[in-house]
Length: 382
Image (cartoon, rainbow, N blue to C red; front, side, top):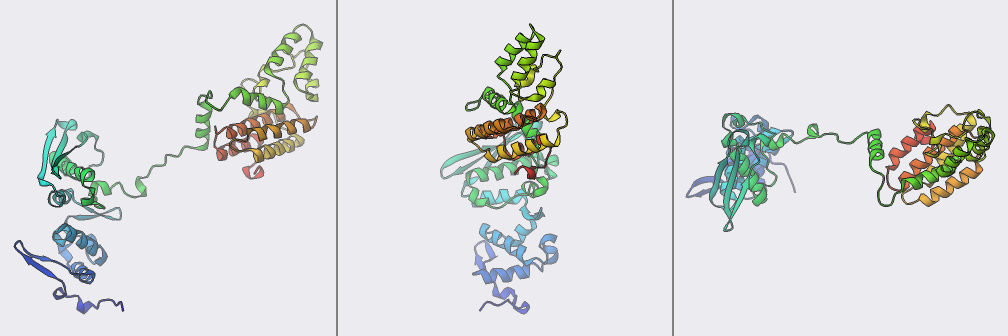
């Protein structure tokens, strides 16, 4: 049966002691002895750093690490720190562990190169019969410098840095899970940086990126959006514009034809050419986006929301043909009273859906953009 050890049984007489040529050392024979030693150790008061006093669990962790390194638990404890909720160790201790427990022949050799901010350290050790090297970056490139030795004795601290990095490269098992104070300072969420760009910045970056990529044709998307907005091909628009120069009446007729049966075009001023040169581009005039079109009537808003719902329901990566089919049905079933402004907005919605189909835009970001074009919340579309 597992039982807690009573306080009166935590005696040093129950903990193994090994005596050798180098003197006596603590040598627990089982986990129970380690636990009892940690309970005694945590009551050592001034013989321990503050973060270990009264903390038997932390003392046990330090004692186990010391026994693995065959060092005094109290010596290792005196070189430990509590940093960002973790136990960290002095760089001096880590360098000592590398020299004594890494299996190198002799000791690490240090060579300092350069001066000032260009000072670096090359450390060499013979491991398994081969010379293993590591050279630190210039001291000016090392950002975390919490030890006062970086200012008072930079070569000494750079040597500690080099020894630790040498071990992490050539024998990481020796200091696995062991960090010095400089490394532990970078632990925790306070050092995390939010690098996620905003929705608008991501969309802007994608729209500014070159469109001439494999699998995507901007002119194809423009032609498809023209089918929904009821606008003629840009070539036909230019021909109609040229023919309108010879006759005002003929120009008005061409304008009616270019709007594909939209009666709103019949109300245009006879002196006007009847066709905006930029209308072939997503249904909006030059310098004006679809989202800045005049206010829509209730009927236009209802139709535009229905278009957005049906197009978005068909939208998915690789589903451009399905979206095109839905767009054709919507064009054929559009009420004759639908304004050109509503058609322009519908063309913009179709273009955004096409970009998602071609994998050019993120679906979640595009849904927010479409909701802004239609003037509704995203939940009204999905």
